[in-house]
Image (tube, rainbow, N blue to C red):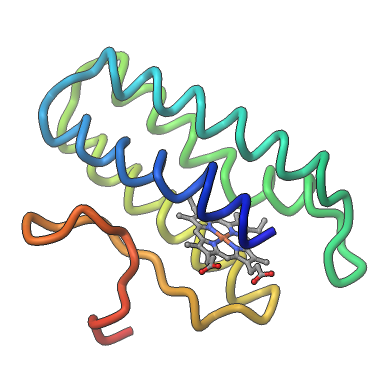
Length: 123
Ligand code: HEC
């Protein structure tokens, strides 16, 4: 699971933010599609986690932010994009907390670092 997070989820979450900052909506749409696909494969690779259905959990936390991101990208709306990206990041953290991995805190990449790991920030 952690390999898939690092290899398939995290880099796309980071690139998605960069694409939105650059106003590169075509690339943002591309990364969003790939991120959705990666979550789908994650759910198939790990059907259950702590006796909970992982695909159901993924859907319940990511569906709304994914739909809002799709709308924001389609309408090239930077403010709506930033808001929906925050919702997606909250979804990452809510699942980490629910599955006893709250120590993995995700934020949004800032100018100093491309990384989304919020290791040095206060919770
Ligand atoms: C459905 C639940 C779920 C969602 C949603 C989720 N994660 Fe995770 N993530 C996990 C679990 C569980 C682990 C711990 C895996 C382990 O260590 O075995 C984890 C671990 C991680 C790690 C640490 C990997 C390591 O080895 O250091 C990163 C980074 C990460 N997730 C990024 C993200 C990002 C970014 C998002 C949102 C775009 C996200 N995750 C959404 C369940 C989730």
